Image (cartoon, rainbow, N blue to C red; front, side, top):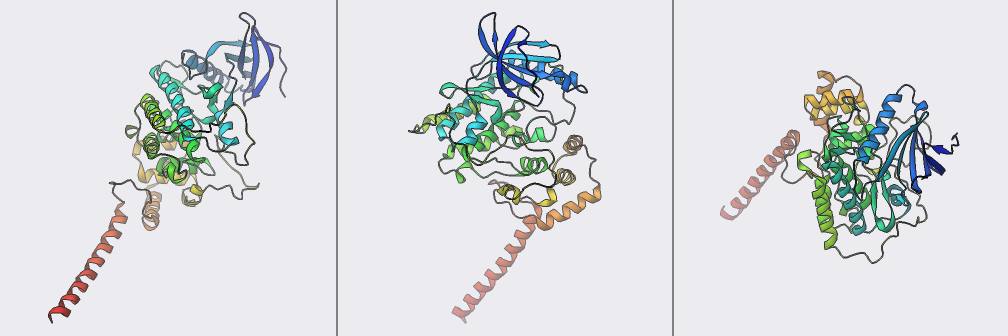
Length: 416
């Protein structure tokens, strides 16, 4: 039940804009300068056990966004506390969440998609230059306002160099569908993690489906760490080849193979957009169309218990995912097979489960050798696994023997 309030500090509450897990967002007026603002609140009495952490993270958002003055980042005006309610006063954005736009209509024209994502990249580049990593880039944290202008919101889990709010080692923060591989592993992250998250968002806007998806967080984690996504234009033929390369670079598993800064990412997106013919029919982003039946959420449930209608929920990518990897323990075995010892330790802390024994690792390895197919999307120039090479060498030897027998038969026929 929402408690009706008339004032927050000096601000006169005009109405409610929305509700979150920990507080309410209000529309309010600043009487000192007669300015209408949005007031984001957090009810500290709802988090008695972790009150200090929530309050610290809330003020961190104010400090993080408050030091940033950029056209593509929401402007913070003030921060305060009224009783058990902490609040941030920020600019009132008259627009729509990008998530709603993506859910409620058909795919946007490619040049419009590139324009939106380039603006987000420009805002992130500015934040990164000021040593702030957002860590939760996703469509529901992007607002599209007048004339397609974009604003990044919600710096609630941003990391600043001077921050007094520290994340525990191995603690995963963010939305699983948009996490970078290093975020999934609970490792230290830098601006290139935001670039990966933005690449996931770009892929989803281009194709209408997430590159890494599944029924639960473990399935998504596995895919984020291992799956090679098909090029966007195999799903949406309107996507130019150059965009395929941009997406592939943004979604590179290794940070060194990714865009090294968001400014270069934005520049490539603008260059590609400028080489394309402009869409004749732009989508008016200010007018909500008739809602579609399919909804793509930004987050997934950490656990899903039995019951309920689950028919038809599995995505195509998750259907191909072996059930052997659909648990935390199996994820740990997979990490033990493919990652370094340090990475396995980090993942063990993240999932809060012990490292697998040598026996279970060997058993998992045996299953892997027996069942692993040749990857369909293996990058050109990379080496296949050793078991696959052994199979290929066997076939090559057999084919060589057959060819020699045929050659011997032809020679015998003509000369004898």
